[in-house]
Length: 234
Image (tube, rainbow, N blue to C red):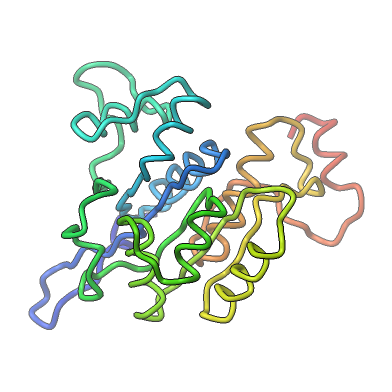
């Protein structure tokens, strides 16, 4: 699919970059974020990335990668598995990174031409901040802008069990127009590896955003079809 999907045109005909903002918070589940980013890039979509301070600790804990502002591109390539060595094409030409403390970043303004925002994974703290409109960091600020501009906001919450306060915050996000999408892998798609289950959740996030992908096998109304495909190695 062409990268033209990520662009619109001004009245003068000048292409305007229209990215999806991916916000990564400190919840466990950084593989979900990596899969979503890979899916967006494979679909020819531009990506603006915001990684919270807490998320850096989670990335380090779950992957062993230190995500650094000054070296974000190399760190992201390693995280996504696109780092093929010096001088190679890492596939990240249409990714922009914004530091979590940069409140002057492009996506902090409603006039910035973002398509929408995907918060994946979403911690209960980020859920609370977005629901209450706190804007305590750039991730929360961009989410607030996304809601006020009536753009798509998908919140992939990753926590269990959920207490009453968080449930109220999730209901509030739903009332404000966000899509609340728990990180709950489905097994009907025939996933038998961790990567396949991760890709299922990432695929559902992209489904909610209206982005085409091939991350998981879709239900076609035939019982046992996925299990049969797994046995055949499809």
